[in-house]
Image (tube, rainbow, N blue to C red; front, side):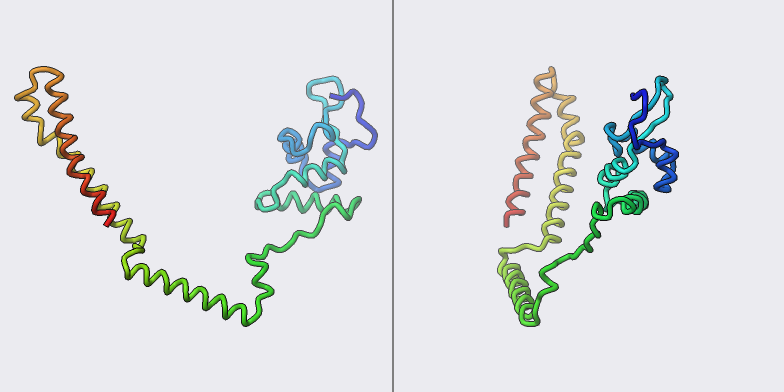
Length: 201
């Protein structure tokens, strides 16, 4: 907190007039650190003393802290940019247009034909590999995995019904009951080992 505002610093309300941005939004930017303490501070002796800030440095700091790609930031960035241009026309460089594939702009007709031939050759290789069995379609793998999961689920769910009578009849103590249950699960897991062999084929 400063007892006296540094030279050139202005109130939030003055900064609002310079930029067109609401005082509430400016205060929020200070609290969130978009405008750092070095260029914004309370001036006075009370806890509710008003904020003052260096307008030019605050605008530059705030502008640089905003994400240009975020829709919610675009309006604030534009308002800050308009103000910054009034005192520093070199600070904000024109935003470059995004190009998906810059190299594609310089492609010749021959280059395009070559890329098309390469793409067709790769597609032919994939189709051949699939026919020879060395490449399996993703949909086929997904179907096999789903079926395997269902088989495991069903096998485990039937264990209680299958052994409950045996447990009641033969389990004279906890160790015997544990052994019956453990062996039942182990038997099912042994059977389910065949699923892995199926998936590898």
